[in-house]
Amino acid sequence: MTQTASILDGKATALAVRETVAAKVATLVAAGVHPGLRVVLVGDDPASEVYVRNKDRAATQAGIDVATIKLPANTSQADLLAEVERLNEDPAVSGILVQLPLPKGLDEAQVVCAIAPEKDVDGLHPANVAALVLGTPGLVSCTPAGCIELLDRSGIDLAGKHVVIVGRSQLVGKPLAQLALARNATVTICHSRTQNLAEHVGRADVIAAAVGVAKLIQGDWVKPGAVVLDVGINRGEDGKLVGDVDFEGASKNASAITPVPGGIGPMTIAMLLSNTVLAAARQAGKAHLIED
Image 1 (spheres, one colour):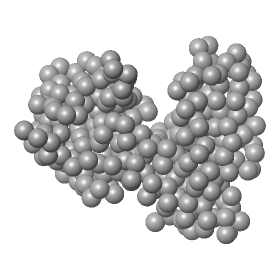
Image 2: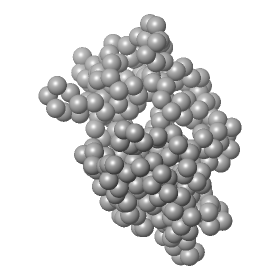
Image 3: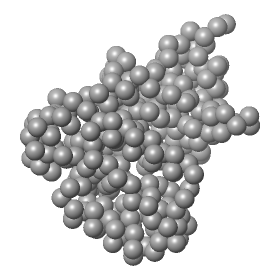
Image 4: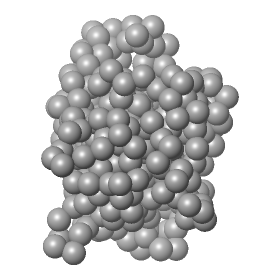
């Protein structure tokens, strides 16, 4: 059997989102509002440096004033918190992103909580998490927001669908469940203690895999016609990037599937830019100029 699934192209969709963001930036600038993003990078983790460079480039292309603040790996908790507070108080900064993971010895939770909620473009502050659960305005974690945006722009409606999420992290699994519920989906969250995982996955209309285990989701688990969102990024034995889903096998059953790379990854950065512009507009009382 050959591949039948259509590819959900995250690169092309992210480009469309970024074009929308650039247009919103132009609208805000014309109204005297200049969105500003500051990325705090502690240490010299190579993967983090690559991510940050990509974010800086994308933000610049969208017209956002962006700068990366690099701090040494031995930065103290107090000094990092002081830097976050300085950015909180800077009116030129609309959004703050502290690149995770932080070096050992630093308390990530405390740092996240120190970011002003209205500038928390990663959507991880407890106030933004609560807003998502309550259905009130906030900033939504970028990767799950990117999943929903990709589905929306691909014409895939979640209403009435059974969405099975494999992974319960605060970064992806839990917020994605809330977003799917808000779209009137029925949601099942699976995790490392779930029994009979294949049976749960096999009942899904939409599968979102975000657990960080290469090719965990087997192709024959996917029921015919299901949509597959592969959020995982793993390094295979051959050094190539692979997802949490057996892409080749799943493609034979799925109606649509995201590739790795080129699926959810580009959407994450696009939604970071979207959050930054939304944050700037809200802080300036100009959200009505850009909200759909």
